[in-house]
Length: 86
Ligand SMILES: [Zn+2]
Image (cartoon, rainbow, N blue to C red; front, side, top):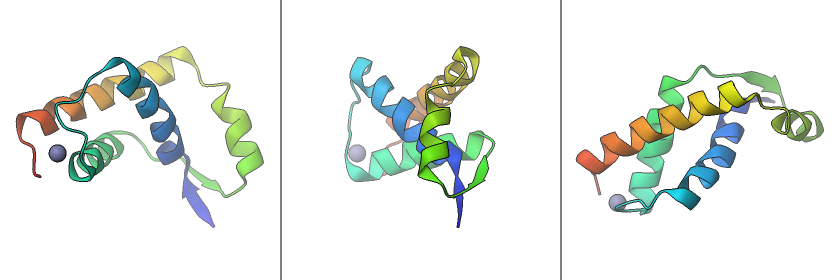
């Protein structure tokens, strides 16, 4: 089964971001919108499903790569907070 590794990374980085950033609203709808916008702006990384490999790689994320994901998350949060769809 193919998985988009970027989705897994996003969950991880998003958790980090939300520790530092207080969302105006964190309802299901807004969270899904933030995820969707972010993922649409990041290149998908498809991998054959193998959790062992996925979680090993997660620890090796380059600082720059993580910074790019954070940047996209922040842009998505801004968009959703300007025009929430809930
Ligand atoms: Zn909301």
